[in-house]
Amino acid sequence: MTDAFFALQRLRNSKTAAFAALQRLRSGKTSAVAGVLVPAAAALVQQGALSSSVQTQARRIRALPEWDFEELMRQTQPGGPLDYTERLRVPGGTMVLKPIQNLALHWVEQKKGLVGPLAVGSGKTIISLLASVVLKAQRPVLFVPPTLQIPLRREIEKLGKHFRLPTNLYIIPYSQLSVASSTALLEQIKPDLIICDEAHFIKASSSARTKRVLRYFRQYPTTRFIALSGTLTSKGLRDYAHLCELALREGSPLPTEEADLIAWANCIDSGSQPQERDWSAFAAFSDLRHIADTNRRQDEARAVFQRRFTRTPGVVATTEASVQCSLNLYEREIETPAEVTDALAALRRSWSRPDGEAMESALDMWRLGMQLSQGFWLRWVWPNGVVDHEWLNARAEWHRQVRYVVERNITGLDSPFLVWQGVSRGLLTQPDIIRAWAAWDAVRHRPTPPTETVWISDFLIRDALRWLREHPKGLIWHNDRATEAALRAAGVPTYGRKEVPPLDGSRKGMALSVRVHGTGLNLQYAHSENLILSFPSSGKTIEQLLGRTHRQGQEADEVTLHYYQHTPEARAAVLTARADARYNEDTQGSPMKLCYGTWV
Image 1 (tube, one colour):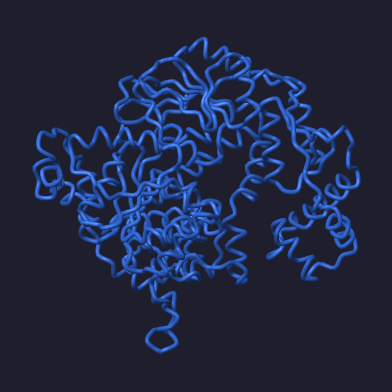
Image 2 (cartoon, one colour):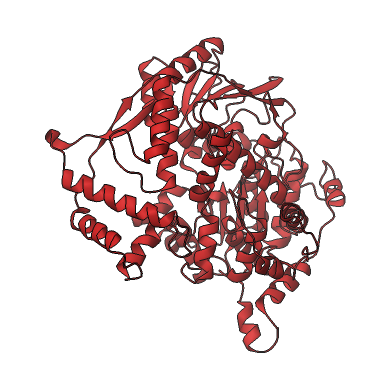
């Protein structure tokens, strides 16, 4: 477990960008995401109206009303005063809205927006379709993941027999919003309501699609917004502070000033390292400085925040599991071949690929470790067999120098990008890194060669095939094109990019891409057994994946996920995902499958 612990720490240091990003924000090197629409408190401070932005934000958030969960849930029961079923149902319709759906539509009507961290399977699709009817929107837009378009069309056909669905709804995949040609897409439609299903698709402030959405709201601030997601956040408040602000404006339960958001995030986020100045800032909202133990103090901060978040008008979070069947997670034991163990040991020792290519960052190191744990790695295929040694050596040396600086964990120089900026701006003047950059800069324009898969052992693929023979109706989930190709070659029905698996209730076993099909699909009617080849380190990713089969409509008594943790890297991924899930549950209030599932 010691090796897994250190692997976990490396994972957190690389994949958890929160701490490094917060440090950059402190130094003013990253643009703010919060403060999209709510007027900056700093302006009031300058006018002498308030003493500080921290007090302003805390005062605003503390003053927000809290709604009575038990009372509102009573009113949203079938036949209750807040049951929207009869109001929205068509003649002859028989479907009845769930209380959680009625509650969401109530806040949509009252607050003209909604933040819905709703558990997978709780009925977000109906909410996303009926919200524009409730608001009488003239030009509503619904953004969905690309893989949800076909299932959504089928759901619309089915739901249209029961409810008055909008006839003016634009349904647009996030992928369309990402391409350069769609820069004017929102301008052309001019929506008065934007609904984001799986709203975590616009959590990253650096992504083109997020920037385009925020730009539109700055230009048209009266546009209303609804954010729905089973996993609203991965690791921190910055994942969804801007979503809360777009939906609820001054009613957002998160700070809309960047400095305050940073301090809150340091006290609450997964993997954060709060300092006393952060606790002092958070004290304006809830003073926990009397708690000496840092871990207990952070647990209390999350509990206080969860209460504030989940009881804010306009926020609807599920508070109990929406699926009645049990969920069990089984470790599948397997013997790791010596060639895999040796390759991983060499990777940890040298920070290099088997062909000698140096890893640039801990993230690259982690990615390669997960590949080797499955028995393969990727090497370059040089055109005409001619190796560009100049390019290769310059790249390797630059990566070594970058890693040396990043590992020193210097504020403002703790990522490869910031190291590059440090060199280009003259902040780093050591001769070795200057020479390395000069050599790499001279050749980095040359194209990177394509890659090919090198298998050092097919032990995992062979075991997956054994599992499928034991569970002929099971689903094998893969993360890599190499394992996808191997399963396809072995005769397993395999579905990856631009391939739609059968959704007609077919009970045949198959292999699915986590990236492509890990969200959106309703597979509960034919499948209840899952095997994942490489456990995602993201709690959000595994929550969505489990939701494909562990959701309403599942008739089996038990849904199972079989997983491997046969290497330190694989064990660390499981640990990190569980920590992510615990953070989500502690702050959002929604039960996470990794938390309430039984680990066997």
